[in-house]
Length: 78
Image 1 (tube, rainbow, N blue to C red):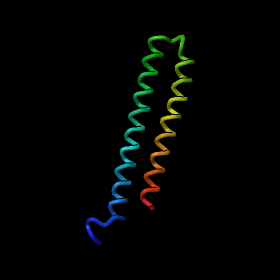
Image 2: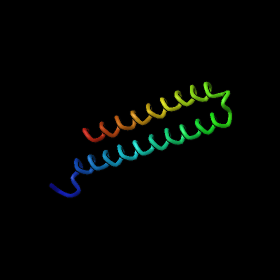
Image 3: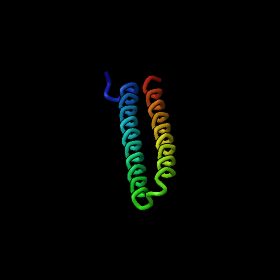
């Protein structure tokens, strides 16, 4: 097997892409949760609204992360 085999490079790129996707999603959700907790600490009366917006935003971040993982898997098996 050659070092520059296209299949090996595809698997390598898919692994790097999946890792970067997970890191980005985790960083986004972590930053979102930190900002939401800070907002709740500053304005406890708005906790329900902040929590609801946080859940929606976290769902969107997870959806984009899942989509990126699917793309990397499809690129790896192509």
